[in-house]
Image (cartoon, rainbow, N blue to C red):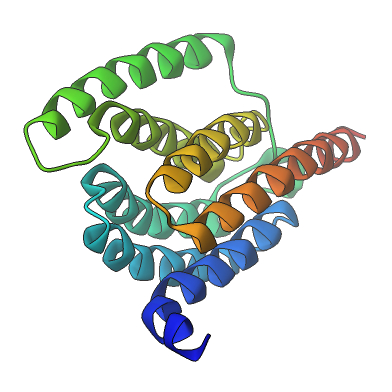
Amino acid sequence: MSTWLEGNWLELTGAMLGVAYVLLAMRQSIWCWPVGILNVSLYIGVFFSARLFGDMVLQAFYLVMGIYGWYQWKYGKSKGLGGKGLPISRIPAHLAVTALVATALMSVVFGNILSGTVSTLPYWDGTTTALGLTGTWMTARKYLENWLVWVFADLLSAGIYVYKELYPTVGFYILLTIVAAIAYRQWKRDMKQQAA
């Protein structure tokens, strides 16, 4: 057991930080962003070792988006919140369509790029990468529907990690799926209270 823990400490620590990030994000705590930055920094190494290069690049994007999200949540303006703080909102229909089309196109492009590498599952890897890009952008903008994107992305990712035998990460992504579903309901309630 101790040998397994020694060999998987990076993945386990990353998974624990990831759970903390999602729980903090669900509660709209700005501290989700620095915790998330630590989480993705560790997972860059995990996915490099597993040869999931799309997911590795996605973690680097999460790192940049962590800084962006931290800034948006701290300095985003809202008339409804006294001129400061970013409120939860629904994604406008035109942006939802744009995000859907962009995600589909990115999935194909990333899959094609990754198929020219030693990536094990290039098109699945490309799809989770595209979903992660969209979901992170939506989270940083505090769009309620970000959690629905995460439910789908996390379930798909869990299947990939079963195939890759990254079992702590499988457990982490199943937990993320459950938390994302709970967070959707929580943010929906919070949005109604905000409006009131």
